Image 1 (spheres, one colour):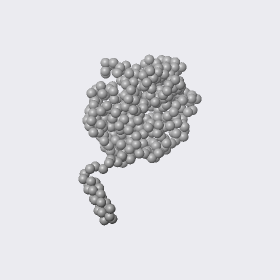
Image 2: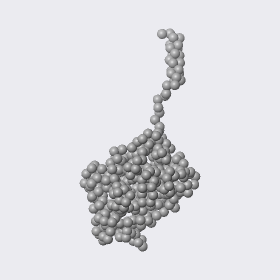
Image 3: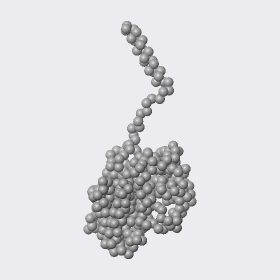
Image 4: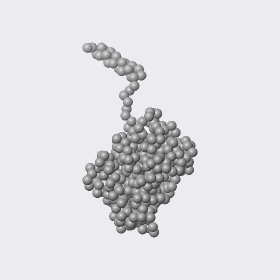
Length: 392
C-alpha cells in the first residue's frame, strides 16, 4: 500500500471516530469518585430507627429520593447507613391505654428491627434503657418489676435481663454487634438506688458493670462478640461524668464512650471545640468515642399540631433550616468528629415522620422537621453526608 493510500485510510478512520463521538451516543459512565460506603469498623454512619415499626403499622409509606416506595431499612442502607440503633424498654405497660397492649420498644418489636436491619445489610446497636419508659438526663426510673430491690439484687437483675435477651436473640441468629448499657446516664440509672448523689458513682457503676459483665459472659459463647457502649449526654458533661466513672472504685468494662450532641442543649458547639472534646475523651478513657445521637432541622414548618422540638433557634450561625444545610451541618460535624479521632455518628430518629401514631403527649411527630424525609415521606435527595469522602 502506498504512503498516500495509507494517509487516506488513516484520515477516514479519524473522521469516522469524530463523527461517532458527536452522534449523541452517550460516553461510558464514569463512576462517582467522591462517594464512599463505609464499613462500621472504619467509621459508623448510624441511624436510630426505633420508631419505624410503629410508623409502618400506622400506615406510613416511605419513598426514596426518586419517589419510589421502598422498605425504610433499604432506603437507609442505600443512603450509606451501616448501623441501626434501636432502643429497648423493660416492660412498657403504659402503652396498653394507647394501643390496647404492649407493642413497641419491647422484646418482639426490637427483635423485628434487628432482623430487618441485618436483612438489609446493616449492623445493629441495641440500646438498653433499663426502664419501662424513656431514660434520659432528667429521668431514669427503675422498671416496675425491679422496684424496691437492694443494690445486689438489682445488679443481678440487670445482669440476668441483659444476658437473657442476648441469649434469646442468639437463638434466632440475631446477635447485635454493639450493646449500649443504659441511655444518657448523666445522673446514673435505676433511681433511686443507682442515682449519682454528692458525686458518689459507686452504685451506678455497679449497675453498669453488671450489664457489661453479662455482655462479656455472653460473648464467651458467641461467634459475634458485641462491643459495649456507655452513654452520656452533651460534651460539656462528658468530662466530669467520665472522671466520676473512672474514680468510682468499680471497674466498668466497656469499649466505646457514646455522647449525645444536640446544638439546642450543647455548650460545645464550635467544631474546633467538638474536635478537642473528642480528642480529650479518647485520651482520658483510652476508648473509642462516638456521637450516638444528633439531629438538625431541615425546615421550620410542621405537618401536624404536635409542636416541634427543634427550631431555627437550634442551629449554629452560618446554617439555615434547609435540606442542603442539614446535610452540610452533618458533613461538618462528621469531619469534626473524625478530626478528633472519633469513630462514629448516629442520627436520632431520622424516620419519625408525621402520622396517626399516638404517644404519651400527642398524635403525629415532634420531629418531622428534623427527619430525612419531606412531608410526603420522600427521602431528601440532598443527603450525601454518609457517603462523603472524608479526610482521616
